[in-house]
Image 1 (tube, rainbow, N blue to C red):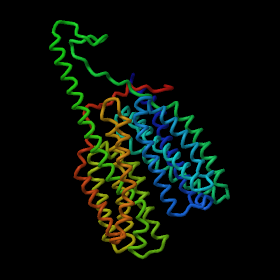
Image 2 (tube, helix red, strand yellow; image 1 turned 90 degrees about the vertical axis):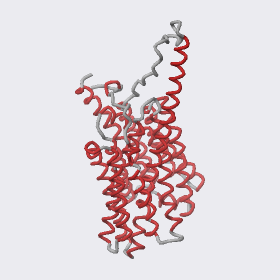
Image 3 (tube, rainbow, N blue to C red; image 1 turned 60 degrees about the vertical axis):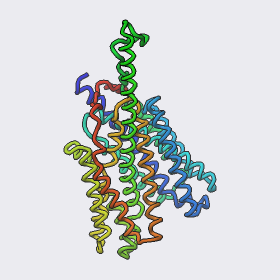
Image 4 (cartoon, rainbow, N blue to C red; image 1 turned 45 degrees about the vertical axis):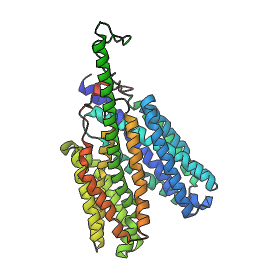
Length: 430
């Protein structure tokens, strides 16, 4: 297969993965923008809502853990189809809920689908990136951010027009099902994994010795099993290390997303409108950073993206902590967004390219550990504010991002995962 044919065949696949990430962001935003209306109708208090959000996050973790092995067994294309269809249907659930119990069930179902889609669509992104032979993972994550932004605008416009919550979510779900039906046929099928090599003394038909040197064959088989166990151990260590880096970066991202506006209002005594600019600065530079991170990664490598991005984020937290002026504080939050933009996509790309036949399982484990950081970060800062000022508590993500910069070599790609795009099955070739 020529490179031209490969490129032509991959364009629809790349567009389909873009669509999956965008759809994920749009449907998540549809729930978020309707939270006030849904909580009013179901009689859910803010404290109860926090518990339900944690329930949704826990269901997402379960979906992530189950989706990895399922994607390795049945293919990530199948899992994307099922998970995208599931969230398109279950996004209507919160709109139909009438009390805290039904809302809890609806959010658990929606969260489970979101977690499963996160793993399966990132596994697809790794397949496409591997075939392209250049970094493109960050651009997929940028489309999630763009989708969330677009979804918030659409949801706000529907509310402004007086649409009922159920009607808006129903339209979003129908649109999601239609988009899923269009994108799934263009996703990549799994590459054919190579079977472990057998010793020369073994026959491929029955794996029995074919000559008299049975002792040599037994020794070769024992060495093969030892090598496989050693590879699995190194792989497990690598996955755990990548998960720890993802935990730190997503912890810092969660802190910035949830506490930036409140930090500006409390530390600088500004209006709520001015404080909202902090999150705007952070999210804008993060989205922009994800669109440009692939080109930067191609030039300087994923390790440098994680190292220098973490250092930039740490510098941003330092500016926020020390700044007495609003413009300088906004600059600090913008530095945090830009610094954190490219790191997590590089980690997921590395996890999905460790070789073997368990790429989705590896990614699901890294996802799970990292997602715990996204949940733990804001909660940790909230607990610390009972003891110290919010701004002082930001020294925690500052220190952790510096640690992440020091450990950036963990993201070094595996040498054995050279892309072989010609072996990938591209459905519906042009």
